[in-house]
Length: 118
Image 1 (cartoon, helix red, strand yellow):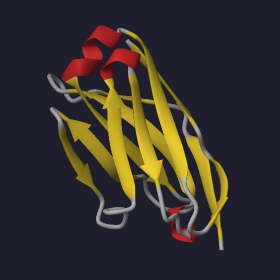
Image 2: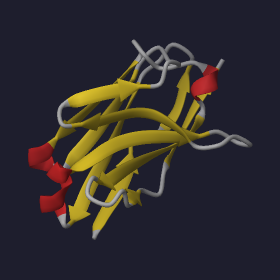
Image 3: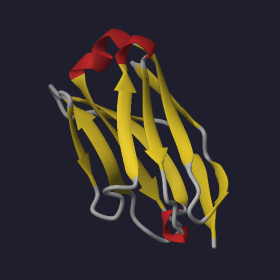
C-alpha cells in the first residue's frame, strides 16, 4: 500500500507560480517501480493528465508544455510539479498518482486546490 499526500496549492494571480508536492508513505520501496503523474480536474470537467514521469522520461499535456515541470526525488519519496506562468484555465484540483507498472493499479492523493485569478 502507498499513501499519497499533496500540498502546495493555493490562490495565485495569473502569471504567478506555485510548486506542488506529493509525498509518499507506506510501501515506498515500490515507488521506484511506479509511474508517477499529476492530474487535474476542473469543475464540470473530467480529470485529465497534466504531467507524468516514468523511468526518467517525462510527458506533458500540450496545454502546460513549457510552463509546468514535473520532477521526483526518490530519496525523499516526493514528487513535485512546478507551475509557472499560470492562467485562469489552470484552476482545478490537482491530484498526484502512482501507477503500479506490473498491473496498472493506481494510487491517488486527496488533491490540492489551485485557483488562478485573472
